[in-house]
Image (cartoon, rainbow, N blue to C red; front, side, top):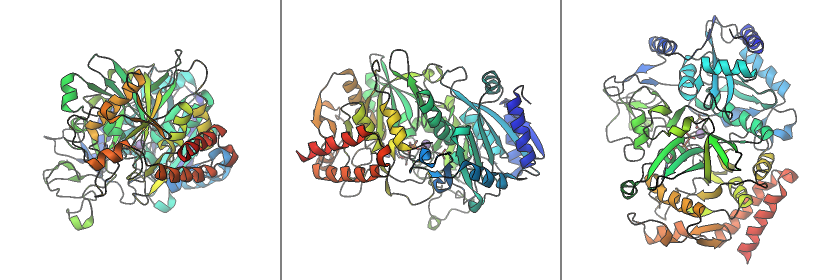
Length: 582
Ligand code: GTP
Ligand code: SPV
Ligand code: MN
């Protein structure tokens, strides 16, 4: 029980709808967590991993039909359909409530309903926001404990503030035909039924910290974004913070935990991880944007994580980690494609590994781990005021056309670059993989309102007194004629970040083109990377014909938003088109 009547009444009301056998208010304590883990071990929800190599770590195998976000079943329910926009599935709030409440009726019979008070962001931060998730999944409770500031301190803040986001969740029957993720931004409410996986079920993450928060952020003058936050410390000891939006499974965790190339390490460069998935930012008194990571842990993609690609992530997950849908070796160690050359014994479904069944680890298999276990975790990540942002980066998976890096000429151009982002789809959501789609600011699946209004909100930050970050676009995924990546990526991406920081400091010039400013190749430190002539050409120049048709594609995409699309973006697109024609 709480001393906040509105919270108690809501919990009692939901309990009378869902009829749980018992209700457990979570306090976030170690004892509570240990009890949950042993209960899940006893009922087979969690399988212990090798205690010598991976102490206190667990494997969870989700239902094989429940392995990723389900965008086609995710809705934004606003009174006026246009407020949700063409970028969201929409249902009228009354219809959506009726549909969901019918699913929730008596669905928790025989189960425990957990009450999870949580805070997104450092508990004493003015930028943080709180919520309460009601769920019948102990796996969700365990993940929420790692991913958020969960328990007594969050409840105390909620009681003080009197307001909170209401999230109701049940795994239901895990039936894909009885599965919906519904958002009611006007009521700060989420109802999620029928999935126990990641972004569908850990309601603090995508449902609250992006869909609901983006709505709140527009009302309150801040931004809730699908961005990593990373600090780059130069040999003089100065740190620039960079926020970067890449779509799901397109490199945020990897960039946030980057290990500098050897020559940079020797020179004294350091990289500090603030966040790997979500960024909340707002203007400070000095006019700069200040950012916090609302999360306290990482729900990271396992496949491809290795001692070569992401040593910081690998170091983080050696103990006290929950792995979901990875494979296991004969001696009970977690394994996935790209980790090393060992052969797994069992695949993600628990079957004897057989390569003809496809990858041993599910392509969207993940680890859940506290951010504090990351060797590069920034001490500033707990700063209630957040970190000042020097640069915003947009990027996607683009096998062709898009060069390695370019810089927006100003804020409006930068917003256009973000709004026009394209990327090939990945396994993070159900559906086809590798299909190029528009994914503005990496928020296509996550913006809780009409993209046209969202772009206008972004544009509104450009006002007198603002000291806005510079905006860049990157593409780590450009391919050569042989179908292989042209840029080494990972640690070498620091070379691109160094160039950006030099541009922010005003210490180097660049080549002005209609699409933005490209680097002079000589001003990028490429000493120890080997690039073919084709790579040089494709990574550092732009193809005017290709961009003309890209701009046509952007025009067609923008037509979906009709007259609601901000005029400034229409004009900015035309300006580039004119310059390309000249
Ligand atoms: P979500 O957690 O789904 O939001 O994803 P994320 O953006 O954090 O993705 P993550 O960093 O986990 O990257 C996923 C995939 O991108 C893995 O297959 C990585 O190997 C690959 N990847 C990351 N960085 C690079 C890079 O610089 N170059 C190349 N070629 N691949 C990369
Ligand atoms: C993503 O898909 O962007 C993720 C994983 O970060 S999930 O929490 O499932 O949304
Ligand atoms: Mn994500």
